[in-house]
Image 1 (tube, rainbow, N blue to C red):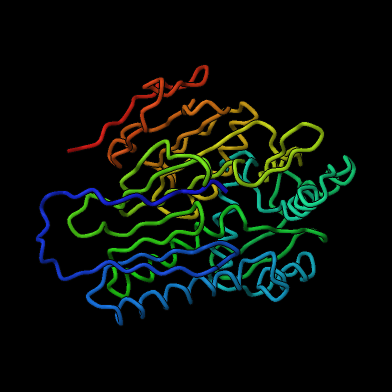
Image 2: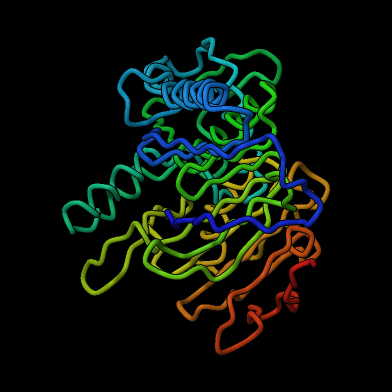
Length: 360
């Protein structure tokens, strides 16, 4: 997962220097990554109580959506009989419903039925040996359906084929970060931010700031290439700079194309700005797949992602090749780190990108 780094805050010039709120930051290991909860509160005891509640919510979602834990709700669900509906938690049902919506909108570039494929490529990264073609073919999910059915009203779902293996790795962290922020808001800690690796969700900005200043980098070893002021939005970045393996002189990413069963071999990085964490998370993965294959990105205007924006970088040249919804980026105060070239280069046939500038 590409790392998104926190930078400092950009003051708006309108806050009182005697503001009673203080900044508190807490970190724990959740969902296999470092989870960060940052919030403003009137004192350490109150801040600690807020953070504890947020981490409990994150752990609750890990217990539901994890494909690593043998006792997770997902593990229990996958043991069900095909075609037989079983009750599931509200979180589990919501994750299934949103995953299916994005699978359809992305033409299968995002698909949680990749559990068996993900395990194959995890083993490939450990062993340095490519999966056998017949193993990939057997593990590849049908692109025409999700492999499960979920009731649109009641919280219940059913597997539709034996051997279906689901994996929420492409949407779970974004959903969890969103739920933690929603919980903090409900407790009155509205000036907050939650980050799970490259998935970040922000509440209201810090006192005296237009937003949480988030620096986007392709890896923990590289300097940021852009900065965004995040407030009331989610930002997710996905790519191959942290998790990959080189076999036979070829680089294979941890991101798998569900349609082919193959790990991506084109160096790709996608950053998505959206209203909710689960959307930003899932579409960041989907856009990597679509961009690596040279496929068009669907028109998302009018659906739950209306107003979303994204940057896709194909190759290793420090410049975004495709940028979509420039007004949304401008509203978020996107700025680019100066490079040899001052403008990102568009992909053939893409909209000509416009470099957003910081607002004063």
